[in-house]
Image (cartoon, rainbow, N blue to C red; front, side, top):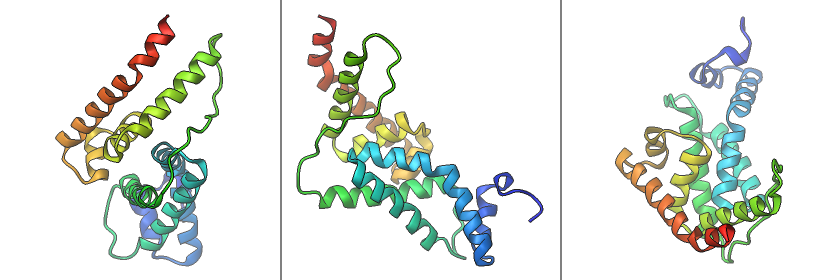
Length: 187
């Protein structure tokens, strides 16, 4: 290897999976470093439970490592990782029997209104939990992960128009949920 792994593109790194075990592990480590924060944030926002998100996050990368083989030709590695994470999150939510508690989020205060901002963040988190999975997922991918509508559509296996519609409806529903609370903040 003449150049460092961080200069390789995703496809070159995936091709290294077919080489010896040492190169495959190095390539996997590089891909993990590139996309782990995005996948972790996605799992945490969709599941809203730290323990389940951690497990799903780890399982995503295990499945990715196990499933990338000679027949893999996808050029969108982050999209592929999101698809894996999405399916695992769906399985986790399907298997979940109890209601979801609102977890306290780590929050770095940047103004005098710490408690109001913390409460607002909790309300937004709660409102996300009230959305159905498709709308929550679209909102999280667009607003938290910054995916374009095209990449969102690819990750969710839907059309771009449907992706835009899901994000719009999620935003509208969040606003509806938060209206009574926001009136209390302005009083």
